[in-house]
Length: 67
Image: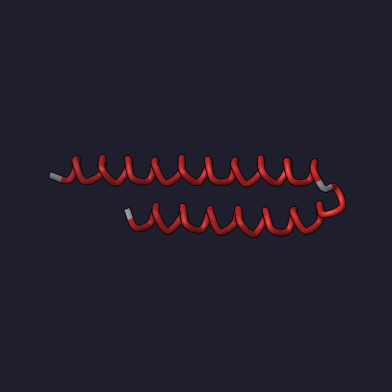
């Protein structure tokens, strides 16, 4: 009875990690694109992208702990 519950929790945690990886990747991609378009705003873009990446990772940790 315990094995199916552990397998389900592992799948949920894996999906959370995959989603977080995709989210951080998209943030990095768009940050590089926006810095290429406007190099003068690179400091602001870097700050916003670091904050957003931390929030995405936080959501992933919550999803892992809740599964």
